[in-house]
Amino acid sequence: MGGCFSKPKPVELKIEVVLPEKERGKEELSASGKGSPRAYQGNGTARHFHAEERLPAPHPYPGPQDCVEAAVCHIKDLENGQMREVELGWGKVLLVKDNGEFHALGHKCPHYGAPLVKGVLSRGRVRCPWHGACFNIGTGDLEDFPGLDSLHKFQVKIEKEKVYVRASKQALQLQRRTKVMAKCISPSAGHSSSTNVLIVGAGAAGLVCAETLRQEGFSDRIVLCTLDRHLPYDRPKLSKSLDAQPEQLALRPKEFFRAYGIEVLTEAQVVTVDVRNKKVVFKDGFKLEYSKLLLAPGSSPKTLSCKGKEVENVFTIRTPEDANRVVRLARGRNAVVVGAGFLGMEVAAYLTEKAHSVSVVELEETPFRRFLGERVGRALMKMFENNRVKFYMQTEVSELRAQEGKLKEVVLKSSKVVRADVCVVGIGAVPATGFLRQSSINLDSRGFIPVNKMMQTNVPGVFAAGDAVTFPLAWRNNRKVNIPHWQMAHAQGRVAAQNMLAQEAEISTVPYLWTAMFGKSLRYAGYGEGFDDVIIQGDLEDLKFVAFYTKGDEVIAVASMNYDPIVSKVAEVLASGRAIRKREVELFVLHSKTGDMSWLTGKGS
Image (cartoon, rainbow, N blue to C red):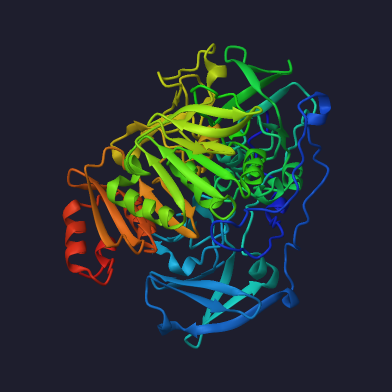
């Protein structure tokens, strides 16, 4: 273990690793990284990477010909707390004035390319208007998620009351900065049966844990194992863009994992965890010892239990292959989606342009009712009906009928029969923790892994993160909750890594999620379970609104469409520790026909 937590040599700290990047497309559909992942089989040495290959790094000291410098404004052009996009010829820069000081940063969020000038500046950081990622204005570093990369920080100088910005041309064009990371120097990497850190699950929590360890200078062996055939990919995109290919969804190219010695075992199923001997056993019999363990297995989709459940062309969406097959089978045919939650509704929206007909079956009386409430659910339902989606509400599937083994009809408990060539089931998920039942790691009655604020389980050295955990939510009085959001998994993976390195970090992020349907985005922040009232400002019919979810006299969550950046603003207020009272919101709705939000930040009236 000697030296495994040591920082890399100073010379390495000068090198920034930057990955090539094409210009971002539309908000919800752009992929977070280019590369062509391959499946690395779980047998023998083929499962391991070699760390000889290195990513090309830009020259650590850009010369004058690689830089561009320009006067971008007069010092009085920006007030404190203001942001502006300025042009440097080779690209734009975000100029920020905070506490009398100017800062210049990359202007696009590295996650999906959102313009940060439309975000929220508060407490020395800028929060993305689309999905809530936060960047430190002093360093450009990513401080809250989603996404993996930070912003470039550019030099600012003031001469004769003018503000000058100097930047490297390459950084201006890349719009993202991968943090400096240690490389693996463990002699056993790639071939021995023991590892320092083992991560079970290669979703957002697993990947962020591995990257955080390397960013913090950890240079011992890290093994990441996944049931998937693919390297870590952008799973939320599966239901929003079912045609997406695995290489478009990859979060990092395979060269990245090689360069930093993060070994990925694909199609590798852990069947037992022996915490006494610190050892896991894989389905193929392979055994691996560990010093520290992160459990981030995610969840498994629930399936239908009705008559005919084994017929062909009935799917849950778990992998790119599932999603691609659904689109192929739905083209010009009849599609039925069971479940009107986020996954089901995203799939239904995507299939309207491909399928002959799309029907949604749901037990509740409106879509999203428990999450977004009756009124917002009804407005969204209307948008779907305007796009030819037929709803069968307050009923469920009683039988799947086949012709020659393939799905032909879905029979409902209401005795209606719906024609169907393909069926997608989106009725929720259960934690994928069956392999832990025989271990001494605590599971609750529903199969979730309870952890503390440091993401520690009841077993020392064993951490857990992501969709399979319950944890104390700081700003809701440490209530134990399960929040299966992409952003939350990132944050938990980071905290787990910090605590593997004994940094005593605690999870404190405000939950943030989004959905995209028919080219429109809904954003949501907070934890709204148990809300007893919804206060709506704006126009639900036009889908230009903000909904505040309250419990007693406190706002516990907010959702919006076409009302940016209010969700990021509320998330920032909640993250600062300030409670938002119901009365404040009622006054805002009563008096504000202009959508003025200064009351939220304590500025203005």
